[in-house]
Length: 133
Image (tube, rainbow, N blue to C red; front, side, top):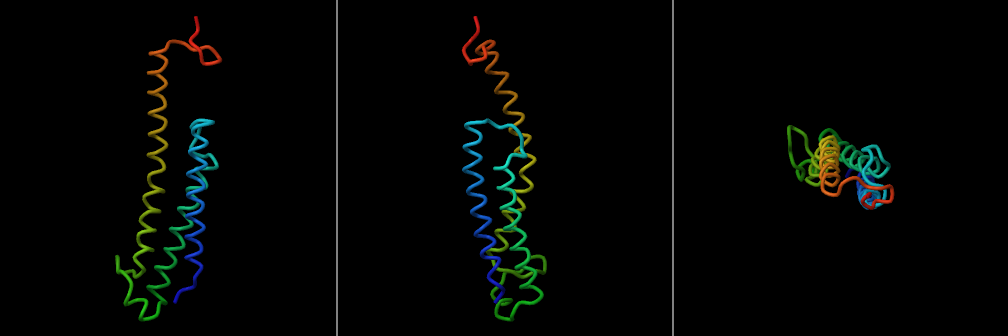
């Protein structure tokens, strides 16, 4: 059996993603969305990379050094062998990392349009957020 460290790496990665998501929600509601490179976003992306890379290692290890029983129980994809959970995690990492630029674009576009609608609907605002006279 492969070393148990990929399991612990995925558990750590899952914790990073959950903490990052909760922190990100809090950040958006208090500070607002300022940039993609905030600490909550970086923690989420780190968690995704940690999970994907550790499961990638597990697939490579199973393919090239795994015991015959492990190889027989594995799922084959593009000639590589690995546990189904590792493949699902690798796919999730790919989706999460590649969706980050789209998410950043989406938030910039929606924020700009929302700000334009609000200023058109409510007129100019004073510093304290109340409509100016």
